[in-house]
Amino acid sequence: MDYSVKLLNAEYSSLLEGYSGLFIVRLANLCVKSNPISLIPVIVDHPLGEKNIEEVADASVPDDDHIDVYPKLEDDIFVIGKGILEAHPEFKMSVETMKNGDEEMRYLHFTMPKVDKNRRDVLLQAVDACYNECKAQFDDNKMKYEAQLAEKIPSLSKEDADKAKEDFKNTYKANKDIIDTKNKEKIQEIEEAYQRYLKNKATSDKGAQEEAAATGDDVKTSFRMSMPDE
Image 1: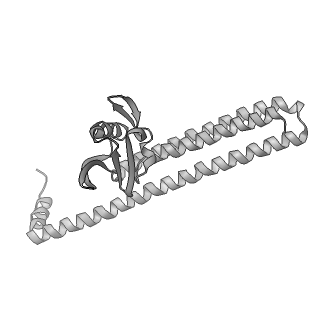
Image 2 (image 1 turned 90 degrees about the horizontal axis):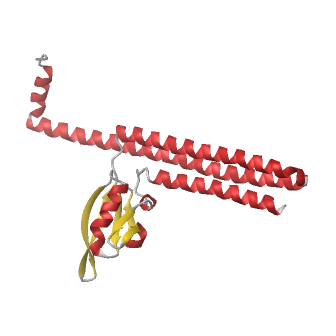
Image 3 (image 1 turned 180 degrees about the horizontal axis):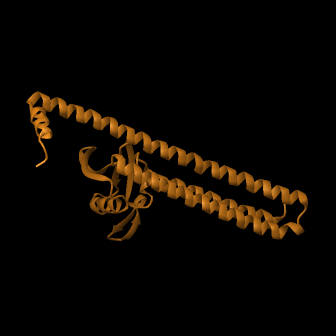
């Protein structure tokens, strides 16, 4: 294949891969389940200058609802916490301690927010916006690629032109499949989290009703609800 066409395909393939990668990171930052990728945007306002989170801390995911962050230097714990909460104000943070040999060390424990109806709606809107923006970037670059390739076609053999088109088509489809799959997975993740929220709420409400019934509070509530409006 003509060298200039190889460069053209490489350039636009790289752009598509970059857009699909960014899309994955953006979805990870719409936090439902705990995911270390959500910490990538965190910038820590460190006394020695701004630091990326990986420069000053390590992270682990004990379960789907929590992220634990371990400062490399314990004195940095609060600036690290501040940086994470600035990137994700929806997280709930606590400072915990753990044994490190004979000593205790402090670390940050973050809890993911529950997905109630309001959060579910906001998340779904955000996913839709991210997907549409990424798809528009794909289509825009596809048109630009085709326009630049068309300029080169008069000087190319039919075999080279066909090969270039086929290679780009395959790259486009592969990356489009990635964002389509990740989009569906994120929507499913949100819906499953919302259903868990509803199930837990129903269980909690049932427990509260049973406790109220045991103390007679339900009788008072029923009586008050039957009173005419004042």
